[in-house]
Image 1 (cartoon, each protein chain N blue to C red):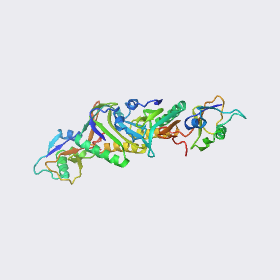
Image 2 (tube, one colour):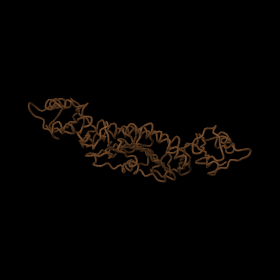
Image 3 (cartoon, rainbow over the protein chains, first blue to last red):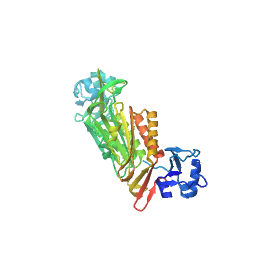
Image 4 (cartoon, chains in turn red, blue, brown, green):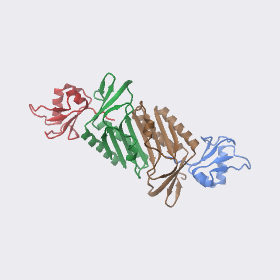
Length: 80
Length: 80
Length: 136
Length: 136
């Protein structure tokens, strides 16, 4: 399961795409994905906000994830 | 005493400069000037508003008029 | 501060006039000729001004806005003469450090221009022409 | 509706994009790089985006505004890459029959863009660089 990284999320992991470990199993929801990432990279827990987009839409924590989804981490936005 | 006319004021009098009659005497205040004009051209009384500018500033009705002043009739403005 | 009465509005120029190293926000309003007024087709608008006084009033309005909102730059430019549908007739704008100030100032500039600046607009329809706002 | 992520903002173009025979009012906001943030001299800003999602979010915001304020045309254009002091980074604008609608819509477009659109800004100072808003 691949996630796209932008802004400070890219700096935290050090790459623009991260392969989420399949062991013990892939995260099945947005909430599980966030838990995995915060466990592996505690700096995610220090951000002002930390959202996930699934197929180009903001996804709430109960949204299910599939291997075919385009998944991205959305750290606090700051356009404009 | 010359007054400058714009917009509908020019249409009412039919000229862009009007020479105020000196008989019996020139109007000595803005209020007197407005009275003279409404008497001579009753259509001024039908406007939504009818202001006078003296030397490029809006003038209240008690402002005194002098022959050296630049006097203008300001019908309702509608710029923009 | 750019205060002008012009024959033609150049909308491409206004951003350059307002740009400033201290400005994070620039807000611009352009007023243009609309094809219909109360469902009647407008052929053109004709603008007339008392130029010396109009410039003086616009300068006062700009100075008031600069003081109130701590603006970096201000533009107020109004066209005169015959204007056809879609042509710009007025452009006002302000630049400031943050966006609140430039939005509020820009709105003030156009609202106050419409209230106070001696400019008159005649709407020309196919069968008549009317000085706008002249009568109640 | 003009929704774009671009390398350079052309501010001279936006009026042409928004002009419309049914529009009496056009309001435009331009955001630019300011030389100071909290009294520290900014060298440049660097913008990054998740382009496919950013375009989708901007389209949603524009559609919301068009429906709410009955706009004739909308522009939302954001730049990416390195931007120096005074360079424009974002332009949003709306045209409508009357000026209330275009002012309110323009403010909504920029405010909502800043809240929701996946674009990230790094402020580069002489001795450090900071992702804006990343930390509380």
